[in-house]
Structure formats: C-alpha cells, structure tokens
Length: 176
Picture 1 (cartoon, rainbow, N blue to C red):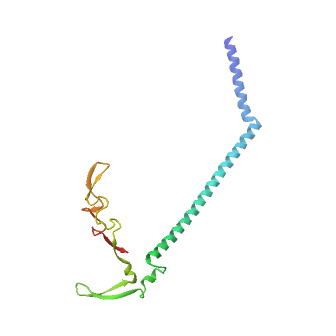
Picture 2: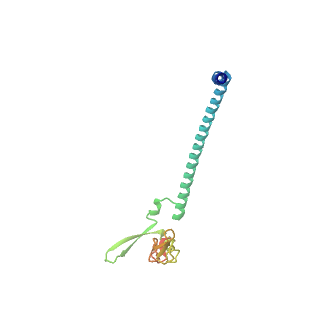
C-alpha cells in the first residue's frame, strides 16, 4: 500500500513538472516575454557597441589634437632655441656666416666658417653635476653601496668620483 501511494505521488509530481515545462515552452505569453527580453538584450548590446565606437572615435580625435599641439609646441621651442622666427635654411645664408682664414698647426691654410649665433654658444655649468665637478650619485667617492644585495661596488655614473659628463671640469660646451 505504501508503494502504491508513493507511486501515485511520484506520478503526480512527474506530470506536474511536465506540465510546467510544457507551459513554459508553449505558453504564448511566455514566448512573447522571452522574445521581448531577447530584443531588449540585443538592443542593449547594440547600444553598448555604438557607445564604444563613439568613445574610440572621440579618443582618436583627441589623440590627433594632442599630436598637433605637441608638434606646434615643438616648432615654437625650436624657433625660440634658435633665436627667432626664421626659416631653417636662412640660418646658413651667406649673410649669416663669415669666412676666416687661419693657419693650422701643420702650416696649411684652411677656411673656417663662423655662425652669427656663435656668441650664444660656449661653456656653461654641467647639467649633471651643476658645476660641482664630483659625481652626484656617489658624492665623489667612486663607489656606491647596493641596498638590495648589501654589497658595495664601483659607481656606474662616474670616473674615479668625477662627473663623467664634464670630465670633472664642471663645465660643458653648449647653448649658454
């Protein structure tokens, strides 16, 4: 008797699951809701893709603007560093250069061309040691202590404790 009751309960349970599953797939309302959700999901995905494309286009446009600004600033800096607003080729016209003859140590005469901007060039303080002549990494000791290995070794940035850029003179040749 218990077995028959359990079989009837199992049969009712199975038919109820089957009817729920059947209703889920064949119910017109459920089908309509499922299609509405699929349309909504597809539209949301399309909106997301469109937004991403717009963002990519805006980023590309901003990158081009920044490149143009950088190029303009570089051109202005180059003109400023060269001493004025002029054409690159005009710096080498005959009006801007003078030719001098001088004797070299071998006794031959050669010609030397000097630029009108030669007063702008000369010796100035070294940009690495700031005229101090000693290496700024090791403070003129010529060796440094490696904090990770807890050992000491030669300084990679100097020559015997003197600045390797200026050779220990504190001065480099360049634009004043």
